Image 1: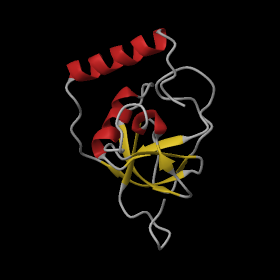
Image 2: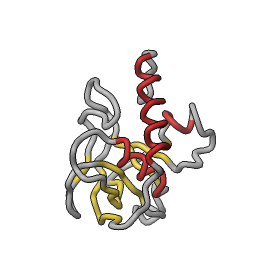
Image 3: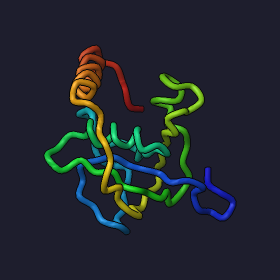
Image 4: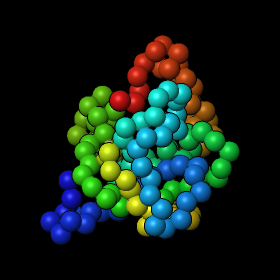
Length: 137
């Protein structure tokens, strides 16, 4: 899913706590930011800043929350964890790829969600995991 010239037709974002710089690659094969388990075979990203903000806010770790502007280096598809299960039609513009994402910049200023909304989201994820739900394919 790329524009005809081989470059993405929009900006894409990835939220994390990792400290990266332009030119670095984000790739599949690492653990999820949200749950324990085996390494993921996909790298996730979004066409909306809000979805990336959630990614940064929910990411585990001690680093600063960061939003990177990313460029897919290969093919990507709609993220079925959201588009098939939660938001038909992909309004969150959520995607995944088995090819790396190249960091092209960082969003330096962004406004996060209210603390109570983050708490509620984390509690919801913990509840799903306690029930044995697979929230990430």
